[in-house]
Image 1 (cartoon, rainbow, N blue to C red):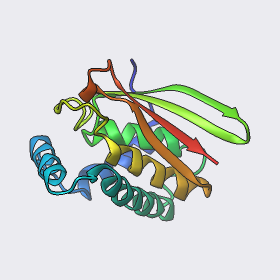
Image 2: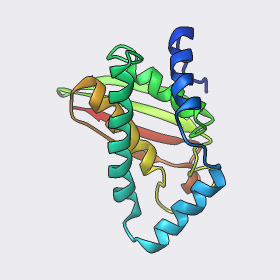
Image 3: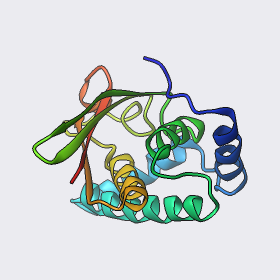
Image 4: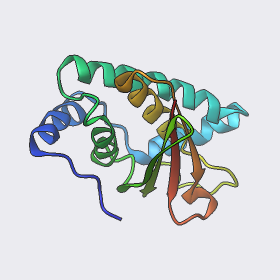
Length: 166
């Protein structure tokens, strides 16, 4: 599985944001926080999805204001940023099609922050799905929902996210 590529100019701009304006938290600490939150709150997934969706929306808005991303490069920039920030080791668009007045994008990820480190019966990467939905919704100006349909945490070969643009 190949990592999504972006042109050098976009990569430099994204690097400036990902590396210089983001906070650094060790991956294991994030996993520990997630598992603690999971114990404290029974429905951690939906809460984290919504919080991450808002964060994705805000991040995309800031990047658009700076002229870093637009409708033409939003998806590639998002996926490349996931790898650059350490949220996944590999990312690939598995499918991108239009059906019944909606666009459906299936994204495959390996080495996801939570899925690769936790074993569960259900998908655990709701924050990645939410962030992606918020980011794309902000840039494309359309309703976007995302969900994880396969997960490393369940024993699947990779995490697969289905993004629906309405």
